[in-house]
Image 1 (cartoon, one colour):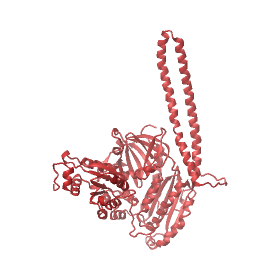
Image 2: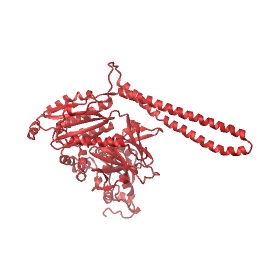
Image 3: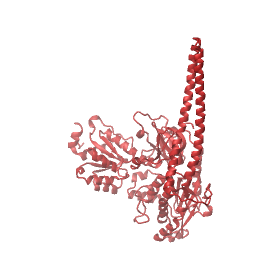
Image 4: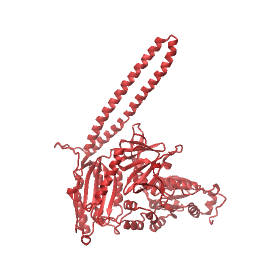
Length: 636
C-alpha cells in the first residue's frame, strides 16, 4: 500500500452503511419495525454436530489467549525472512566487489585461488536462496495453520445473543409496570453469534437503553392516543451481522429526544456551559446525553434519573472497541445503533505516525484518511479549528505538539484521520499514514490502565516486536474540547514573571500540556499529575506553593481532591485554584464550599486574570520573595 492511501473498499462500505441507516430512518415505520421487515438473520453460522463437551470458561479464555500470543510471535518470522533476504542481497553485493578484486588477482597470476573464492561465494548465495525460499514457505504454511487454529479457538468463544435477549422481555415488562406504561418488546436476531465476553459485557448497556426507552422515550397511553399513536408503545431490539461487525439497534416509537431540553438540562446540571452550548451543532448537543451527570428526569429513582446510565453505556461500548450512534425524530421515536466487532482480539487497524512514534486506530471506526492540505482549515466562533467533510463540520484535534519528543520535527504535509463519533466525526491530525493490516488487540498494561488515560484503548505488537498504542476518537475529541485556547497570549518580560512551584492536576493530555505551557510562560515551575489520586501522591512527596486542578477526572475528581487536601492540617493554607470547563453557578459554589480559593473557566482564561488571581492568593510578601523587584504591586 502506498503511503497515505486508504483502503477504498472499506471506505465505500462505511459510507454505504451510513446511507442505509439514514434511508431506513426516513421511512414512516422506521421507529416501529415489524419482525418480517427486518433483515437480521445470522449468516455463516456453523452447524452443530449434536455432540457437546462441557469445558470451564476460564480454561477456554486461557487457550484463546495462548493462541493470540503464538499468533503475535508468528508475525516476527516475517522479519526473519526479510533479514535473510537482506543478507542474500548483501552477499551478492560482496560478490560484485570481489569480482573487481579478482580481475587484479588474475593479472598477478593468482587465477586458481581467485576462482576457488568465487565458487565459495556462489555456493553461499545459492544456500541463502534456498534458506530464503524455505523460510518463506514455512512462514506461509505456519501462518495458514495458525490462522485456522486461531479462528477455530476464537470460534469456540462465540455464542448466540439469545442468552442475552431471552432475559429482556421480562425486564421491559417489569419497568413498564413500575412506571405505569403499556410497552411491548420486539426482538429479532437472537441467533446472531458473537464473542462470549462481548455478549456478557453488553448486558448492562442494553438494560440501560431499554430502561431509558421506557422511562424517557415511550409516552403515557393517554398522551400517545392524543397524538394518534397506538396506546401501547413498542421497543425493538434487532441484531444483525455486517461483515466482521455485529450491529445492534435499540428502537422506541416514543416522543424522541428534544435537543432544546438537552441544552437546558445540561446547563442546569453543570454538564456544560451556556457559552459552549451556543457553539454546538445538533450532533454535538446529542453527545451531551453521554456525559457524566446528565439526566432529564428531575427525580432520582431505581430506573433512571441518576445521571449515570448513558455514560455507562458509552464507556462499555468504547471498552469493546465499538461505536454508538443516535438517530431521533421529535414525536416519532429514537434509535440507538451499537456496532461492535464479532471478536475483539483480532481486528484491522490503520497505522500512522505522530512525530517519530507509531500509533494505530481500528479501521471500523475510521471513515477516511486524507491529506490535511486537501481541506480548508477554518475557525469556529469559539476559536476551535475544523474542516468541512460533506455536510459535516469536523473538529480537528492535533496531538502532535503534545506527543512528539524534543528532537522530533512535525511534518509539513500532515494527514487527517476522519473517525466516527456518535453523531458525526472528529478529525485527528497525524504526520504520516503508514497503511492498514490485521492486528491482535491487547489490553492495556494494568499500570497504565489504572489511570484510565483518555484516547487510549489498547495496544498491539508489530512484526518488529515493538508495542504500538491504539487510539480511540471519543477520548481524543474530549481532550480537544476541554483544552484551553492554545494561542492564548501569555508572553511576559523576564522581570514580570512569577516564580512559584505549582502542581497542575488534569486528566486531559492536551489540556494539561496547554495549561502547563501557559503557566511556564508566566514564570511558574510546573509539575503535573494525571488525576486526583496521582495529585495526592505528588503533593505528599513534593513542595508546592499552589495547586491547580480540573474537576472531571477518573478515580478521584477535583471536588474529592480539594476536600481531601483541606482535611489535612498541613495543607489548610495551600492556595487552590480550580480551572474547569464547567461554568454553572452550582459547580462554582460547590468547588468553593469544599475548599477551593478561586474558580476559573478554561474557555475564558486570560493571562492578566491568572496573574492577578495568583498575586491575590499568595499575598504581596510571597510575591516579593518569589517574584522580581519590578511591577509587583498587587494593586496594579
